[in-house]
Amino acid sequence: MRQKLPIGVDDFREIRELGLEYVDKSQLICDLLDLDARVVLAPRPRRFGKTVNLSMLRWFFERRGEDLSGLFAGLRVWDAGDSYREHFQRHPVISLSFKGTRHDTFEGCWEALRRKIEGVFHEHRALLTTGQLSEWEERHFRAILDGTANRAGYERSLLDLSTYLRRAHGERVVLLLDEYDEPIHAGYTHGYAPQILGFCRNFLTEALKGNPHLFKAVLTGILRVARESIFSGLNNIAVYSLLRPELNTCFGFTESEVEALLDRAGEGARLHDVRAWYNGYLFGGQVVYNPWSILSFLSSADKRLRGYWVATSANELIRDVLQRHALRLEEPLRTLMEGGSIERRLDEDVALSDLAHSEQALWSLLVFTGYLRAEEALGPPGQEPWRLAIPNREVHEVYTSTFRQWLEAAGAAPVHAFAVAFDGKQVWARAEPARLTR
Image (cartoon, rainbow, N blue to C red):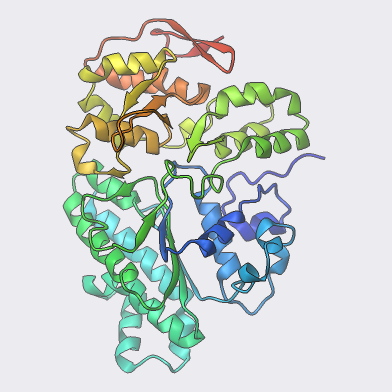
């Protein structure tokens, strides 16, 4: 029977009800409940399962009139014990995604953000019929719904909504915010960073700092944007980046998970080649595969190994930064493209304002966006460097085609032909034409 793969399906309930292939990541629920932290930020590269995971959290925690236990039957969380299941469908949930807020202008971005917040209030409009909102609260709720609220109203919108939900349900709220940093990246790329940072700082601080109505908050994105003061007032946030061991198997596919997927597809004999193309990422010391590329490969009619993940984003920010640093990057990039590694210090708190002049910020950006793998190397205590390398053949193609073209356009020397081996497979990278052949 042909595998039913969840290509383009980000909703956990839909995946389970349609019987689509699902790699069990419900351990994330257990890990979150075990963590002391109330507010968790888990940044990961794009297409590594963040949206599906947040959808899973919503369907597990959200209080509903229907019994959804069938969605979790047979998954790790359901077999983990009563201490975890007691939170099943117990909490009101606020689920918000900033995906799709990237715009060329602040006005466009701001309009998209307002629409997102209005949508969340619309989901919870039944609060207006409970009789538990004061006249003042109802007026402000309706102002969000009809788009007439002032900026301060939007900035404190999540705090207000969590207050109303806890009052109505008698339980603290689970807050899920996906792609929190997308508007911030757009602001830096298109020149309206100060305006968007001002809103995001107040919006997140109001919702997350000292909010007594919050049970758990989970934020995902690509980076921790820290020194721009986004989180300056949030000393209660716990950041579990891909350099940390916590949550290291919750995003991306492990070797055993990929092997099981390939076996069910009748492609088990191709594990070695698949490993060379899509393996090689390190999350907290755990080697993981790119899930988007694995699922795309399995869904392709010809089962051809090619670059799938690399075609899913324009990467304007990376292009801009690489071109700014083009001349001084020639030697380290050449080492990486020839299959070698370099040692650099990394900063988990990527300061976008430093990218134009800080090479360390650039290497951190490339690691956290998935274009380099980072393995801890020995060094002086407190100053341990990281050994950086290109993770696999798929990403290597980006360096020898897209990145090379960007760098040469900025005045860097052209790349010459050389051989690189990934998992025993030799790859030839050429300056002209920009492609890979065996």
